[in-house]
Image (cartoon, rainbow, N blue to C red; front, side, top):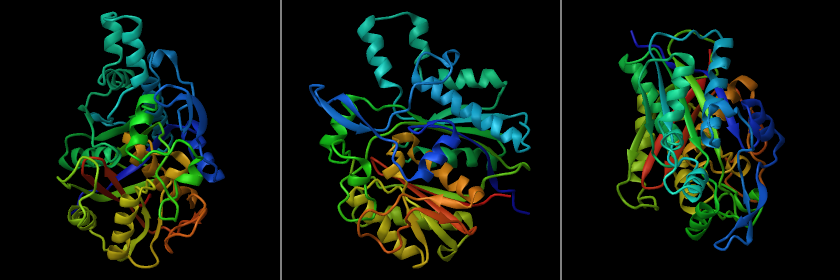
Length: 385
C-alpha cells in the first residue's frame, strides 16, 4: 500500500497586498499590482523605484524586525487555518524555514547605531530566532531547519518537508518561506544585472511569456503552510516533485536545458503522472528572456497545447526566496476558490498563456521555480480533499 499523499491543510501569508492570505487573494483577483513608487533608491539615494514591500504591521511581541513579525504572523495564520479545517497537531511537528536574506535594513541600522550593540539585540536578528520563538509559542518539538536555494527556496522547502513526512521523521510540518530584503542596495545591484526593472510599473515591464518584457519588480513576502498526511480538509495535495542543479553559472541557465529538463521529467515520475495530465503550469516566469524562453520550451516539450501557463510575478512581484511559496499558495487556493487569478495579458505572447481569472476544473498543476546559481525545482499539485 502506498503512503498517503502530503496535503496542504493550512495557509498564511504576508505580502505586498497586506497581512493575511485573503489580502493576497483579493489583490491578485483585482488584477492590480502590489507595487508602489518609493524614493530613496539609486546609488545616491536620489531616485524613485517601483517596489513591492510588506506594509508595516504585525505584533511587537513577535520581534523587533519586520522579518520576524512577518514570519511568525504567516506561520500563526497557517496553523489557525489548519485547525479550523480539522487538523490536530501530532507529537512531532517540525518547522522548515526557507530564507536567503534576512531583514537587511535592520542589520544596517543595528551596526550604524551601535558598532557592537547588545548581545540580546544581536540574537534577535539571528536566522534561528523567529522559528525558535514560533516553536516555543505552540510547543512544537520536531526538527527545525532553514533551507536556501535562492529563488527556488519555496519549492525546495516544500520538498524537504515532504521528504521528512515520507521518511516518518515527523507527523506534520509547518513550512514557512520569508524574504524581506527590498532595500536600495539590493535594488541597485539587481538593476545592474538587468533583471530588476524599477523605473516602470510592473505590468508595463514585467510581461512573462509576452513581447516587451524586461524583468521584474523586486518584492517581499512571508508565506506559510501546514503540511500533513493525516486527515484534514485540504487546499491541495502535493503529489511529488524534484530538484536538480545546472552546475553551470552563477546567473545564467545552462543553454541546452538538460538539467532543467531532467527536473521536469523526474518530478512527473516522482508524482506518478504523465505530462498530459498537467492542466496548468504555475511558472517561475520572472519576465526575463532566458527564464521565460526556457519554461516556454519545456511547456511545449512536456505538455499538450491545452495546458495553460501563467506567472503571478507581474502582480505580486518577485519575492526572491519566498517567490515559489507565494505562487504555491495561489495554485493551492485556486483549487478551492474555483479559479486562478492570472495577470491580464498586456501584449502579444505565448498562445497558451492564461489571462485574468481562469476557471479551475480540477486538473493537475506543475509549479516550476528556477533559482539563481543553477537551482531547478518542480512540484506537482493536485486538488485537495
